[in-house]
Image (tube, rainbow, N blue to C red; front, side, top):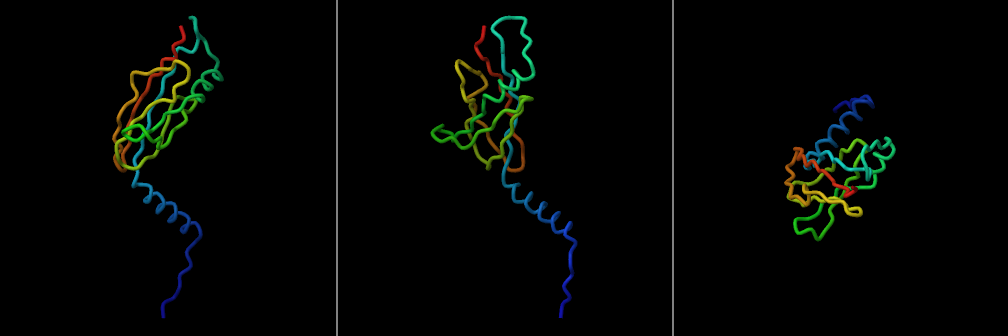
Length: 130
């Protein structure tokens, strides 16, 4: 008859975390940095950190199917301008959630997500403020 061995709870937790990470390896990552500007209609422009964070918080990066008929997911943009989203491998169209007259020559863009890899798409948003 086999003896049962009691494992320390910390070992059980570590094993569960490692195994859950393995399950997530079936996905890839889309990430990048978003630059937004101008934020003021006149120069010199000295927005407060709160105004900058608000400009990023008001916008999202959208991920669509290739024919752009289905929104797969979106990512909020952090106050530092960075975004990240995990996706199954495949090809997608990335665009911004347009606010007012926001525009970008960087999107819409087709990206290909590869399992276990990060695809980087940096985006510059022109707010149209002059």
